[in-house]
Image (cartoon, rainbow, N blue to C red; front, side, top):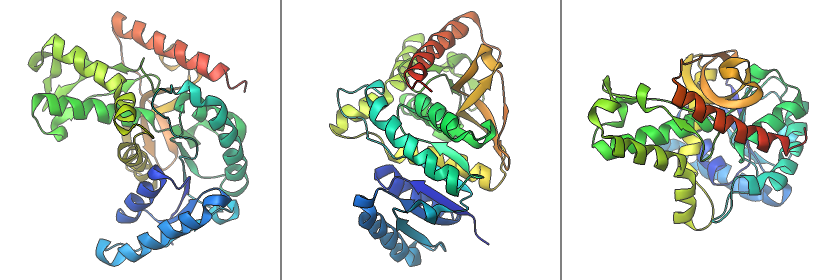
Length: 310
């Protein structure tokens, strides 16, 4: 029997999630959107079914606006919400997307209470916390996608800057999903060679700044809307590790309970994702400068989370 993947939100990210999940044959897929967008969701599902012969995948893909149709889902990926527009901060999105997350949490709690839930909706640090509080799900069952995306951007920019294969760039980004995130150049390597030995300080500083502002850079280029290809793939990486018990170590927004000196907040940290969901948080020994940057991003996340009043 195939696994079942529910995608809450059928916009740009949702439709790409559906295509990637189908191409990887991760399971059958349900695209859920609001009643006004049910027909477009059904249309996207049908279009993907018609692509299957050339895509060479077997999956049943459906569209709906009824939460009953996600019943028994193994994975729920939540993208529902208003996208960030040019000139908006992630905090500007808080009130409108919090209302949406409340509705989503109610539906998922009722019909897919055992699913691994991957949150993509911005402002992510607050939305994953809100979803966790509203559902009451165990912490291993709720993950924020952000760290996986932030690290992908960090690796991509390094590869672009140095003219090397992105496959040979390894590194991680800690903290909140915003301008205070913490890339770790000291622990980043290119084919095993420390980044600090093959890039200048000026290059590294520029790459770190670009990573922190990556989402804003894309928003400005689009003029309307935000990134969708890279967030979709980042969420699929997490879902695949769970569904196939790959036990990958991925930077994700996970609930910290003492790790990194954080209590009760979802912060981007390296975690192992396997068949039990978020199975383990790995702690990195940080130097004083890195600790100070992490404390700054924790403060920003805490302030945003407090605004949810949950």
